[in-house]
Image (cartoon, helix red, strand yellow):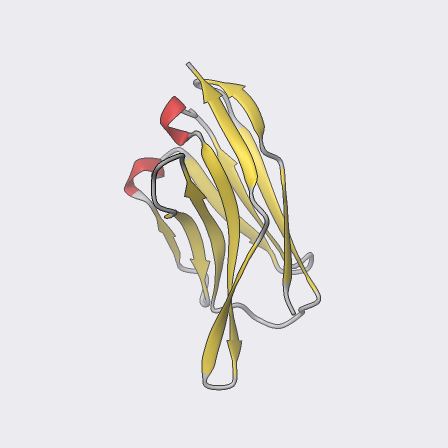
Length: 119
């Protein structure tokens, strides 16, 4: 079973930067997709950024131009560089992976890491 472990959350002032990392263990194959979602209090979990098989990327409109997702295949990890952070970026950020299994795919989630942006 794939295990995703996040790191790098914390408290930062508006305009600052943070870098989140997610390491995938117990799995060395390819991912259909790997990336980040977030959930703010009282809101639904939403896509932040994802790298698809083939290395195409998708970003939420709210983070385009500020966040950059990247992956390190050798380390089986994905990172999210977050710049120009805003208070509305405050949320729990979850690493996400979609793993192909036979003719289907399974979703895996990390435990989440808190990002708090103060105004």
